[in-house]
Length: 302
Image 1 (tube, rainbow, N blue to C red):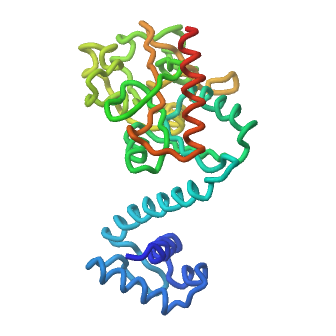
Image 2: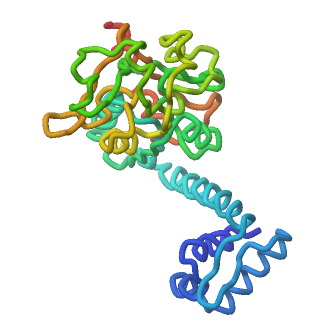
């Protein structure tokens, strides 16, 4: 299977038309059609359903698209790493993570590095723990920020000198908005919008479930989410109360929403992780040294 043909396949999948893809790739339509047929024969699967003016991916085509995107991303990353092996440190660093105010800590490291190494580029990928660790395991990300509870057993990691505070985002005209803090009993009879990471029971210790205790199974969870922006929209529309972290949803004076912390206070630690025995590019190695120096010093001052 040729890498060039995978790029052809991805272009056709993106354009939804062999004609448009051929124009984009500057190849003839018969040439492109032949390459795709050869690819189908090589894999022994039908990848497209061909219509008069368009194509649609089959289930096998959708699977190949996902794998091909990962392969192309990996090849592009390797090429960038080797092209950056010069006296002046440059290149790309790929960082994944969920929504958290602790990203400020990482941003400060980036800002400090920029003055000395302006040719380093940073790529951020947002997703929940499952999303970002899958990409980390495949080598598509260099570092990942994980909010506890999370499984750290497979990774090297350093604690970020910050904590996320759990609470409830609600409309300002909600009855619970009159309270300064929210207790478990307040949440038993209201519709809840909850992050899937907080709900999962696969971790050896789930601090969120422990906070609720025996009432955890009594919660009326009407919606789950992985990123808070859409959850906030659901709250605005009156779907329910969102259990989330502070400072990741707009609750300013011009917003219809407000945040109330849980009582007893519930905080989550954060770690930046990377694969064990990871071979880093020069840029990623420099970033790692910087976060180790800054975060270790910050923790020792606490």
